[in-house]
Image 1 (tube, rainbow, N blue to C red):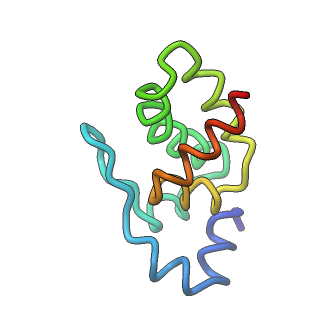
Image 2 (cartoon, rainbow, N blue to C red):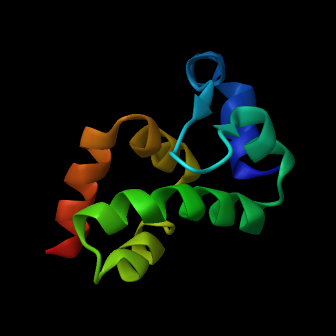
Length: 96
């Protein structure tokens, strides 16, 4: 069982709260899509959504910051994708 499917399966609040992450120009990322993917693909899917958001803040460091963030638990990454203020705060912390 993957981390995300475990998190989504054991925490109905996250499953019911997390509908989809919408990033302009990309297919929405849903909990079902993420839970169905193997762990490495989950990180890829999350990274593909994180990168353009981080690139707007730090164009020259977006790849490095995205890579650093992908070491974080998937449930926290989902939270940051849904709540951009949380993402901004984490990016500032990671980039210092």
